Amino acid sequence: MTSPDPAQRPKLVVWAYRCWLASGVLMALLGALVVVVSVFDDSGTVASGALGVLVLIVGLAYILLGSKAFTGDVRWRSSLSALTLVVVAMLLFLSVGLGSPLFALTLLAGVIGLFGSLLAYRPESEFWFTGKEPEPRKKRNLGRSTKP
Image (cartoon, rainbow, N blue to C red; front, side, top):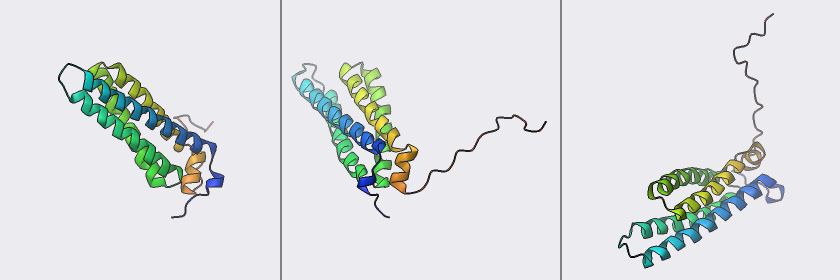
């Protein structure tokens, strides 16, 4: 597998990396904030602290995987894209289920990462990652007859 030329990197790939990096940093910071808040919380539960640690780890994973994907390896891009989708789904349930504004902010950070993953799969980015020209889109007939 040949590595794509970093000098030819499209702007969409750069913006995808920026979104992944911003999302990872925000998630790591918010995860650390949840851990600190749960330490000083008098409720006696460790569940929020454990979820904060999980969010912190996921934020760090976004940063590391995003850096690997930015080099042009298609496998890291795929892994990070799958991770962003799963994390957004998980955070949706956490923010609604727990009713926590911190997890709602974390969900927003996760959506930023998901947007980066969408940018990484645009045709211009796809060509840079894979080196294959995107297939031309076929016009669909939608049941209309072309005969007179």
